[in-house]
Length: 440
Image 1 (cartoon, one colour):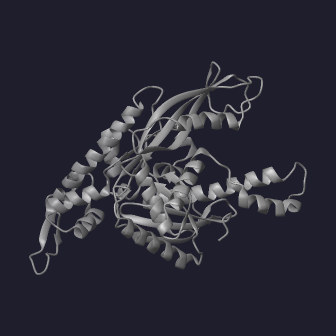
Image 2 (cartoon, helix red, strand yellow; image 1 turned 30 degrees about the vertical axis):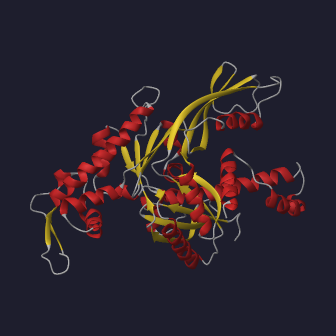
């Protein structure tokens, strides 16, 4: 497998597991060469609850993607979500030894490493440390401090924290399925990369990714991630409510939701009835669509109110934190009829459905641009961008200014085997890999 050309995104969701293989075409768009899907049996609310079943589902999705594409999958970029994820804000600073030298990447790395030493609750580990604004001496609101002079470097950080055991379980499943873990990314960040525009992130936007087991939230303002949250409700709780409320089996409830479900009860008339076959010779059940949409409406309203509370906690109602671009809905749950209107009604914010088609090549299948594939496309993008970044770093480091690149090919190949640009998150991924290797 050519790592610099092809990447694989593995979305381990509560409802489905998706393996997506792709590469960039000459127009810098993503060409999906293979996709595999499997029903997710061992994941509840974004957390692995049955290792064996999860491994089988991953292998099934990967095998399908391999047979479609003819490409052997070796390493994957995996997304993490789940109700154990939480975020916090933290400010920290370092005092530089020599204020007459310009600030470089090493200073920022020192500052980030200092944040990594924060003491968390037992069993928790920091998974993302995302710098927001920097402050150099007394000058505030600096987005890029590299190249500036200053003695004291300070920054506000968005810190994402998760349960170590949950993350290691995902790592264990991926490794046991015969795959290498090239990177781990927070799923709301992957979805955001796939469906949000640069202008939206600048103006201020809340991305709501409604999955099967969880609803993920990512808030951006001034192009910077400001808040993330994972709410432990998703499309499955709506299905469960339909199952209980109408006394039918889960499979029928899911079909009812997809085919006839609506988040707006006023739309259906009392006379609209759907008949469901009874079990094993029993009489068929008749359900009014009005009742169905009332059940859905009640649960969807609860999910939106939970999310809106997080948006308000972030500070949307303040002048500085106002989200001008409103809300973008994505994920499988966002395809529910009239959901956008209900979200606008409850929050008073503009809303749209986010499709990941902007980054896909023009001849991609229509199914791939469905909101339910937003996370998988985002993970694939992360894998391709990571490979491109590594390649650039290697070429820059090996090729002296003015030299012929072709003369350095051997050196570049050599470097590509040993060199890996280590961000703070790469180090976390590596420590997870070490843990999994030692646990053999």
